[in-house]
Length: 269
Image 1 (spheres, rainbow, N blue to C red):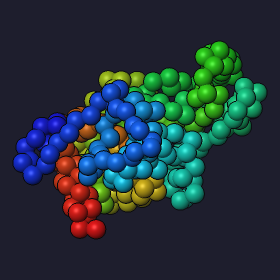
Image 2 (tube, helix red, strand yellow):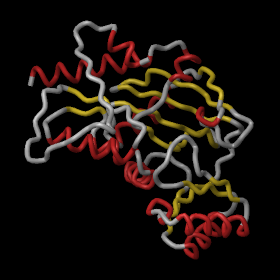
Image 3 (cartoon, helix red, strand yellow):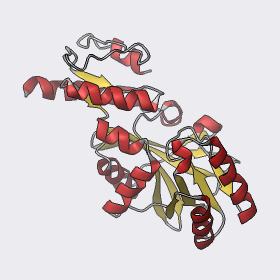
Image 4 (cartoon, rainbow, N blue to C red):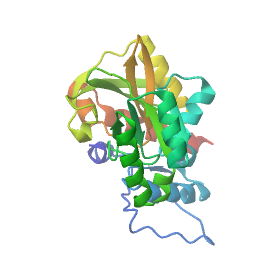
C-alpha cells in the first residue's frame, strides 16, 4: 500500500532497499538519500541500519531513538512511567525467584511478555504459580538475552477487544477496535478490526504516548479499563491494513504526506 502510494507521486524518487543486502562502510558514511522510511520486519537490522543512516545525515522515520524505545517493552514502559501516562501495572525481574515473587505481589492473572517481540508472539497469560514456574523454566532453557529480562504485566480484562490508534505527525488519523474471542486480540493473531470513533480522550492519550517516545508516526495500542485508557504498547513500524479497511481512511497517504514534508524541511534547512 505504501509503495503504491509513493509510486503515484511523480515528485518522489522512490528507492526500495532490502536490509539483507545493505552494506555500510564506516570510514565513508555518505548518502544521497533525503529520508529513509523504516518498514523492516527485522528489529535488529532496522535499528542498526537507522543509526548508520543517521550518521550519514539522513533523516529516518522513525528515528533510532524512537525505534529503539518502541522495540523494547521495558524501555517503553519506563518512558510512559516517566511521563505519567496510564499503563497496566508492570514489574520487571531478572531471575525466576524474583519473577515469582513479583507475580505473587501483583496477583494473578498476569501476562508474561518478551521484552522484544511483535505480533503477539510468545505471550503467556499466567493464572497461578504452577503455570508461572513452567513458563519461567521454558524461558530459562531458551536462554536468549531477551528471555533473561522477565517483563510482567498485570492482566487487564479488556472484554475481547483493544484499540489500535494510528498517529502520524501531530494527528490521530485513524482508530480501530480489534476484537477476538481469544485474550490476544492482535490482528496478526486473528483479531478483527472495527471502526472506532476518535474521542478527545483517545486522541490525547495516543498523541501523548507517541510524543513520549519521540515518534514521527506510531501505532498506539490502548486498553479500556475502568473508564480510562491504558497504553499497552507503542509500535514504530505499525501495520495498518486492518485499520484502513475498517475506517476507510487513507493511512498510507497520510504517511507519505509526512515523509514528503520531512524531506521539504531538510531541503529548506
